[in-house]
Image 1 (tube, rainbow, N blue to C red):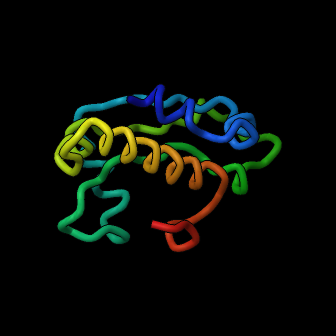
Image 2 (cartoon, helix red, strand yellow):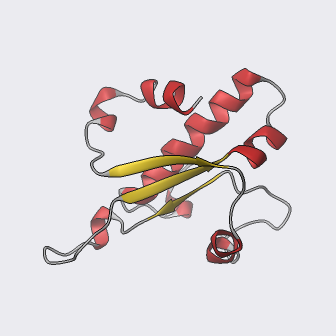
Length: 111
């Protein structure tokens, strides 16, 4: 599903992404949930998370590991009732998390 979502991204957008690992994990960790606790609705599922330093916050001498976007299989499966819905949720989640990679905050992105 992640491959399908990535293939559907516009090429001009996908070409700007460098050194970003996209991983599928079963569930968010407690640390993941704590990192977004203030921003999230307590009843909503965390479908994915960006782990890294946004392009807008980097300096030329900053040592960086690859950025990572984690997509959470359990929450995606709980909010989607069909495979088509799951693919759409994965695509929207990847795009949202790439927004963080580019330096956008949640309030700057459509939900």
